[in-house]
Image (cartoon, rainbow, N blue to C red; front, top):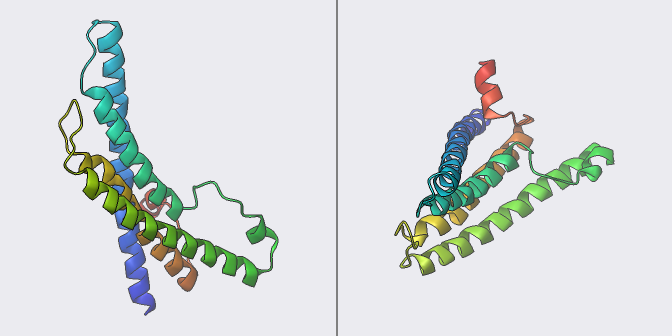
Length: 173
């Protein structure tokens, strides 16, 4: 059983490694497009019609995927005073409860995000003519990543491992 849980955790780390690179790529796309937009507007005097929209779509996807990625590695803002000062059993109970509550939130986000994405799928973005499903699809995608990482955190608790950033793990091997 331990071997299966550890294999699932390795798969989760692999997925997070890919997501980390996707987030970095989206950030690079945003940076290039916004720089290009500023240059085109103020130097050339002719703003681009699509760059702001693509940058906004990139930011939404980066935020939703980044939330799941950051959750896995404890990089989100948290109040952990109970975990620090409580006895070990209570701290562990609180940590597991938080992961389960986040998983419930992610399930709600998945259900409602998918419903919203379906409702707006017939609409298109004004300048790029991309279906709004691509923009609103970030919510269920982020929710799925949060659920996967919540399972990974529960596996960590069961196996006694500590989550390590996928990049650090790759460097140590």
